[in-house]
Length: 407
Image 1 (cartoon, helix red, strand yellow):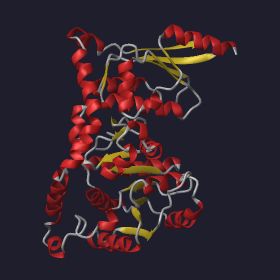
Image 2: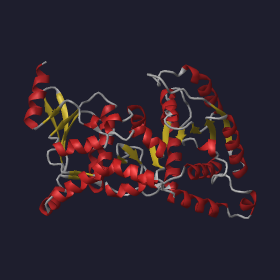
Image 3: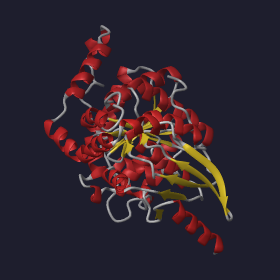
Image 4: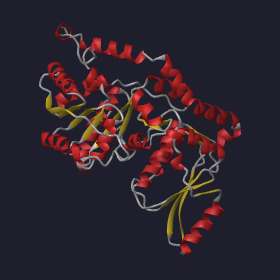
């Protein structure tokens, strides 16, 4: 698995605006330890989120006009988002590449703990209740003798009010205890969205390399796959039992959850089906290879112009990724005039692209956004990708650049 998750490029699959990393359990475990190495290299903490039903519901609220900007923006800035929601996994194939696996938090904790034993990596447990933290600590030490648990305690995270990101004074003691432990991994089990907001408002103060938001699993850990009976462990059947439990849990897809998610994702599915049906076979043959780009100057502005192909899917994204610089050195012009179809991988590429340019001082200018493309972005909670300043064609863009040059 090493080398398959490059540090430069993370292009997720975007489903209803939520970015999912298309990884298996083993791949996700390896990547998390890769994030630890990268954090020690630049000193920045990394965030891994488990997107379960509660997390997705809180991020979406069932209506694009009522999307929670706080949690959704945190998920988009996270270093990894793993799907723990079976309806999302099952429906993913209708809007792009299928997600490989529904990853259960308990399985991820077990894999990380097993790998931490080998690498001598320490963990810290932060939960919502003292008894759940104590129980999780004892279970992990019992199942993985020699595991380095650097510490753990409970916290009542305050994320209510108009400014949830500003109420960090009460977190000072907790952050100091975590930093003093020198832990490599922080398991954050406060429930969503409390855990994600808590990390975001303390991001700049935390020294722990990787924080993994795992929902409220520690509060209900008893009887889970982390708690196999002693006799099962003694006869070496623990992995077999755990895998069977994981399969049963992944198959338990509530009909109500499935219908609810289907209704949310249905507009995106219909838009994709409609756009693909409207394409002519001749267009399909010629549009895939037409990726045009150039560097040019207008006045004092240096620009990188990228004319997107007619179909932006996983195959196209692989080729587009080679054109994108990690550190932008010019303004970006995205020409959508030929775009007819965008799948979840294409949306992930756009999200990745905008994210790179947002970190700098350069503008992203959109040209030729059709009504269909705008609706597709709206239904996928990506309206911020279509800012108020957009241009119908290149002539309107040039007029804008000349006006800016004259100021």
